[in-house]
Each structure stands twice: as structure tokens, then as C-alpha cells.
Length: 120
Image 1 (cartoon, rainbow, N blue to C red):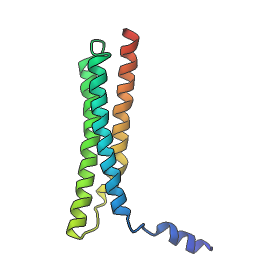
Image 2 (image 1 turned 60 degrees about the horizontal axis):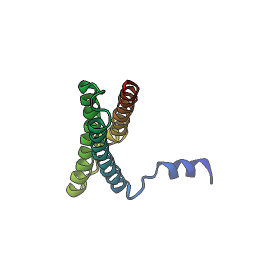
Image 3 (image 1 turned 120 degrees about the vertical axis):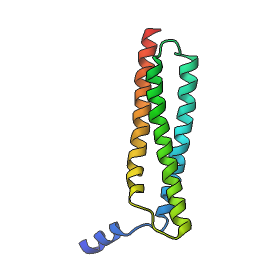
Image 4 (image 1 turned 120 degrees about the horizontal axis):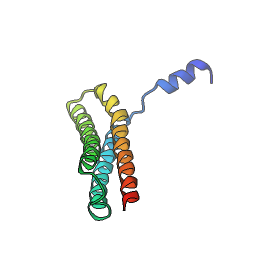
């Protein structure tokens, strides 16, 4: 295979790329919902007294924002596909930013939770 053929193969878009993107956003939305439930359960039952409330709101805000971004991304993919249009370029930004925000929320939660365990 020569260099031109390799570059062309890499640049070729997968025919189901939009459906893969929709599934990605759908799973990221589910992860956000499950994370919110787990965070709520842990902060109420295990370390509710030792955790500052404003820190819990920050964690909830980050994880919720990631879920909203992922849900918006899935909605945009569905909207574009039902209208027969290509998905917008902002979707690809959401694909990168939403998991980062979710990871930041989970990371902050782990930090808050380990601090709370040290106080107990």
C-alpha cells in the first residue's frame, strides 16, 4: 500500500459514524445519570456529615453538565439525521468536552470523598 492510499483510507469516514456518535452520547448520558445516583447515595449514607454541601453541589453541577451536554449531542445527531442533514461541527467538540467534564466531576467527587473519609 502506498502513502497516498494510506492517507485516503484514514481520511475516509465510516458509513455509520453518526450512529456510533449517537450511541456514544447515549452511553455518556447513562453514565452521568448513574454517577449522579451513586454520588447521591454515597454522600447521603456514608459521608453525609463530613462533606461540605457546596462541594457536593460542584460535583453535581459538573456531572449534570456532562449529562446535559451528552443528551444535547444525541439530540443534535437525531435532529440532523431526521432532517437529512450532516451533523454540525459543534457535535465533535461536545464529543471531546462532555467526557472531560464528567471525568472532572468524578475526580472532584473522589477528592471530596477521600477527604471526608479522613475526617471520619
